Length: 393
Image 1 (cartoon, rainbow, N blue to C red):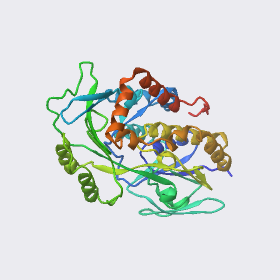
Image 2: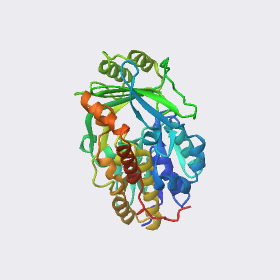
Image 3: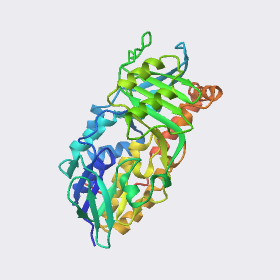
Image 4: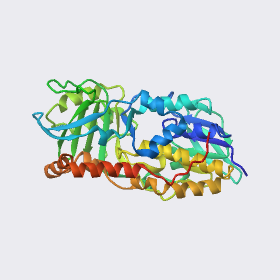
């Protein structure tokens, strides 16, 4: 039987992208989002390589993204006296195009709101699959039956928990955490904008910790290691306290950064995690984006989210709504591009465990050959010429 009525959970990146493809290709799509509206702000996300740029062009949003892209931001790694030890070029950090996550989410919502029925301020509470469909219960609206349910609801996916199992069975943390916060932190005496228009952010490392200030990727970014997750993910006050304890003895400009973070209205903290999944589908349910293949701060998540949405929609259209065939093809095609999400540890790179490892990391960016090799590798990971053109409108 052809599956035509689709429920998507999540309206950040993968969800609206999938809604745009499915809605314009003959599907009846509902998107449910827990937040009351599209979430603004957040750190910058980027696209790199030919595959990502082609996807943006096929979606018709490449010009929109370019119009709102952030300036390239170089990271200058400094010691406690602001002496520069390394420069991480913006091309390595920000790919070919970089845009604030909230701005990208707004573009995707605007381009897909006529293709789907968006329901904000609600969430899925129960899913029961039968041979002919999926019965879904919500926190606010009446229960409804759909042909398929797609989880595009992030690394802490409720759809994955309800259909695949407990989060701890599929998500692993390496003991690193990160926080992003707005708020002004004075960078007196430091150059933050170059004559070329590029911006400059300043990073300070001590073993197991990084603070990055300025630039456009995030007003303040903290990365740190901890042996225990001593905070409540639903309580921002406990998250702020967890961050403050991790950097309590910090020098440089860290006290001012912590003070700004304590008052920031858009403070966010979470573990650096990655998913461990051999299949992104089960029955009439599929996962897209971070719900299925996350690697926090790994640098490929947003591009993978758009790629996954395109492949899933393309396979459903190619299979004429036969979800069994489409889901099997989706799993098969996404195995290669999601390999990058199953490897690597951004925490160890951003906040090395010793002074020696910090120096080794910094030297990679002063060695031109090594830097070019790393840049080539990021493009190679992001480019996949095996993804077909499904002929979607």
